[in-house]
Length: 279
Image (cartoon, rainbow, N blue to C red; front, side, top):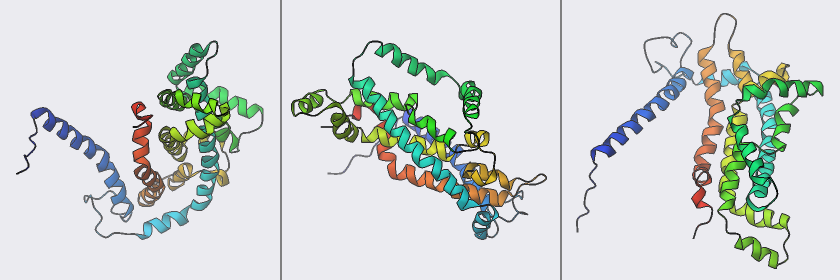
């Protein structure tokens, strides 16, 4: 029995063309970045899109041109506790909104959601003045401490919506077996909410890894710069070393790409509310 060939209708062809065009818009700048990272300085603004000769030494030169590993260490010092604080406090806050009933719960949750409408520039100056008054500027703490106070409104909303899909019968069964609230949270809710927690971890990783504004505001000394700030060192007063700048950009981009491809399954499940409980 021959398999029937699938026929595309015009709307499907249109959707396919739109996807191809969107992919090209994303991939062409990435290809230009990779191509430029392998060129000589003279070829950067030449007519050829691809390099005449691939200069792989640009990558080692880029690492040596700046204190790359020092900036990597600084980035990890900020990244690791920020991810821990965001995931833990975000899950704990979401559990409270998903499972506890208390007066003013809906009002408090609406206020939480309303904070998502505030641009970060609105709270930028008050937050900076607060940390300056307590003497925490030019340190990593202003970039870490906010993660331990809720984990962000969007993250709480994402995890809370997922936890609401978990049947309450599991809580009741655990109560019958003598479990307390903390045991239910740590042994039932957190394991079942693995997908949104991984999604939040990816969001947090991307935000901290690529953050330029935060370190620029709070860090004054070069030895405390992060990788995102370190890229600015390739820009001189009169010229920019584009080939090494693009090489360093690729090196910084790789961990985020690898993480996304490894965890994309959980990322997709995490933003799908209906996948809270399977089977």
